[in-house]
Every structure is written in structure tokens, then in C-alpha cells.
Image (cartoon, rainbow over all chains, first blue to last red):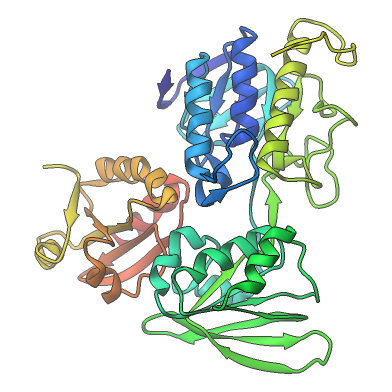
Length: 329
Length: 107
């Protein structure tokens, strides 16, 4: 069932899952099948990062490329079918000790016996004042949302990982010219993506450079270019472009928990080795909110599964480090 | 009348000139997932604040001219107008209070 939370309510559930990406939905599927009747709170962006991707070629089970939004929609449907209660709400306050309550943006207060945190990560920005100034006027972190506006135009993509290369390739299908600016002399993206990037006639790469400033006009407030700094020569050059797509990675969405749970460097939630258990009993973490290594849809799904199995053991009063029962499905 | 008016080139001018000084317009597209995710929030805000502002929405595929006229380069974008002039712009998918605050400060 789905529901929209309404003001002033108090809801208690044995298991609450925060987040609606692959980690959250997989946790929900396993928890529902275990009879835990989980409640899943979607967060601000239902479906998470997959909803703004296009082709997914590395999620096993699909021989042909599938679309990210479709994949996460299927996960949602599966979680619903198994009996998950899904509520569109965003937690704005969390008290993980004592009363164990979560306050939703809707005004509803939630309490739980066990909690799975799968709040994911959000796009990082460069942090330049000019970047904030021109947001909505040419600065973007979502090529699938904003690529539309750059038909035949020149755009800059900043970054060197999978996201940056995927965004550059997506934009190359629309824009006239795509310039990838990377601060190092090699990319971190998968080889198959790099091969496509280097072979694409519309894409150029500027190595060892960083965006020092984004420039534009005031009426209308739109981008006209970037100032690039060469990190080796120290020289500065101006590059004309109408769009700047920032794809320099993601930061884990942990600000609600940062003073209550131990974090790893980079702000990721710390879990016990080989487990999704955090330092607080009954609180588990899965997916990009804790994963500073792999950050894939499939690893997030795997961790969501682990979190649900561990939450089930916790709720049954069993120690978490028992050898797993053989489970064939 | 619905709380949110569907706008295109045929009725945009009329919407902007209708009585009521504050107008709010959401620019969106069918292929933009964050736009779809924002829709229920926007409708809620429109329902709650319909007495202090008029709310509309523009599908940028159907009315690219309107998006172009306001220099829209990102969706979803919500523009708040007072006396026919844009006074605030909220870009991306944000919590509800960001929209209610923007409308309140213009009203």
C-alpha cells in the first residue's frame, strides 16, 4: 500500500527504512518477505540517483541496457507487492537514542524498533560562489534533466568518474560540443565508458585543469563560459560555454545522523566490518550512505539485503554474528 | 477551477495579467524525473496558498517559447512573479518549505 503522511500523526513500526534507492527497496523486499511489515519513507527524491540516470548496463539480470528510472520503479513495485508500506515523506529530525523517533516533513512522527538508513548520497558541487549564482542559468548536476536546453550548444562537464563520463556521453547526443574538464591526467571511469568517450567526435577532454570561476551575464542570468586553471602550468584560460555540468562525485546524506553515529572520512556512516550494523543496536546502514568504496546499484542492493536480514535477527533477539542459515532464495 | 493552471502560449499572457499580484509558475517536462517528483509538493503548496497567489505550470516541450523568454535552463524551476516581474527562482527538487517561503516573501 502507499500513503501520504498527514500532519500530526504518530506512527510506530517494527522496522522503518529510510530511502528509496536500490538499498532501501531491496531491504524492504527482504524485510517484507520476513514478515516484518516494514515502513519505507522515500525521502525528498523518490527513487534516488537512479531516477536521473539513463542506460544501466551493469545491473545483472538484463542482457540489454535498461533505463535507471524503470529499474528503480520495478524495485518499488516489487517492494509494494511483498507488502511494504511506502510513504512519501522526508525525515527532518532523527533521535536514534532514547525514544527512537523520526520527525517527518509532513508533521508525522515515526518510531521504530529497528531502523535501516539507506538515505544515499547527493551530488557534490564545486563550492564556487559563481556556481551557486548561476544554478538554473546554466549550472547543473543533472544532464538528463537539463541537457534539453543545450541543443547544438557548447557545454562543459566537470569530473572524471563514471558519472562525469556518462553525463558527457549523454550530452554529446544533444549538444554541439562537449568539453570534459578533469583535474587529473587520467579518468577513474570504467574502461568501456572511457573508450566510448575518447571515440566520440563531439567530446574533447581538457586534462589537469580545474574550474576556477563560472562567468555569465546578469539579465538574463546565464552562463557564458568558465575560467580554467591549468594545475601544472598554473596558467588560466577562458573557455566559452553555455552550460556547466558538475559531476565530481557524491556526498553521503548523513547530516541527520552525524552527531549520533560514528562516521568514516568523507562523512559516510561507519558499520561493523562485514555487517551493516552501526554503533547503535538496531540501527543499520546500507548503500551509498555508508559505502565509500563501490557505490554501485548492485552493491547497494546487496547491502540492503544484508541490512534486512540483520534487522530481522536483531528484532528476533538473536546475535548478529551467528553464521547465516543457508537461504536458497 | 484547479489550483494549478496549465499554461501555454495561448493563455500565459492572460494568466500573468489576471487579478492577484503574485503568480507562481512551475517549469517542467514529462521526461524529467525530479519534475515528476516535485509535482505533488507543488500541487499541495498551490492548494494551501491559492488565496495569496495564482499557480500555473508550463510543460517546456509544449511551450519552449515561454521557457526561453525567462531564460529557463534547468527543470524543475519554479518562478515567482510579483507585478509581472520575476522576483524569485527556486531551481531543482526542494523540500516544501522552500516553495512556501518563496511565495510568502513575494506576497
